[in-house]
Amino acid sequence: MIFDKAFKEAIGRLSSSEKDKLIFRLLKKDLDLANQLYFELVSGDSKESRRKETLKKLQKMVNSAKEPQYYFSPGILLMHMRDTSGVINEHVKITKDKYGEVSLQIFVLKEFLKIHNTFFKDSPLKKAYTMNIYFVVKAFKIMVLLKKMHEDSLLDFADDLAEIGWMFRDNPVLMNVAIKNGLDVNWLVGNKIPDNIAEIEKNLRQQGFLK
Image 1: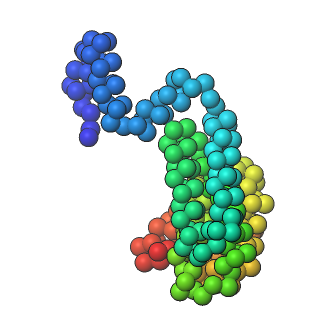
Image 2 (image 1 turned 90 degrees about the vertical axis):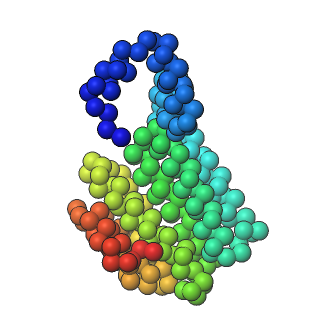
Image 3 (image 1 turned 60 degrees about the vertical axis):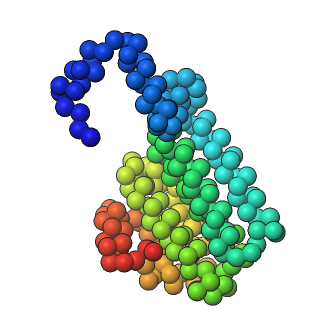
């Protein structure tokens, strides 16, 4: 909805009490906005402190996925990874922490790649395809996010990206999925993400890849 000048002026003429009632009514229907405002106006937390708390939560989730009872299939591991994505998304919605979004996404991708390569590296493509394509999509997402940030951020994460790239190379099935879906792991290993990585990803999706 576009808020025209007349509408804005009408809102401005409301009394303070009327505005307060309206705001609280709207916030009850938009919990994400309510949480964001609470973080900014009341909590006293910084993005960095929230990021650390989120990282602790993610570490616990990753550790729980390493428990023997969860080694059923790549599909179960994928469920755990998707749960961590929800935690990261919530953190970003509340804090608008772009740097944290990248660092947390990289942490999750690295840790779940380690688990996947340890237990499911030799799984048939048909059995592990959904998990493998999810890794490829995550790698693209991280690169797209990084290219939106200051170039110094690439240096901050260079070693992590290289480690992710080498784990891709160490898994022939995963590498096969990466190659067929347009992911060049040299972008990760050599820290040479194309400037037009977002356009590359978009074109691949339009051609039916990355799914």
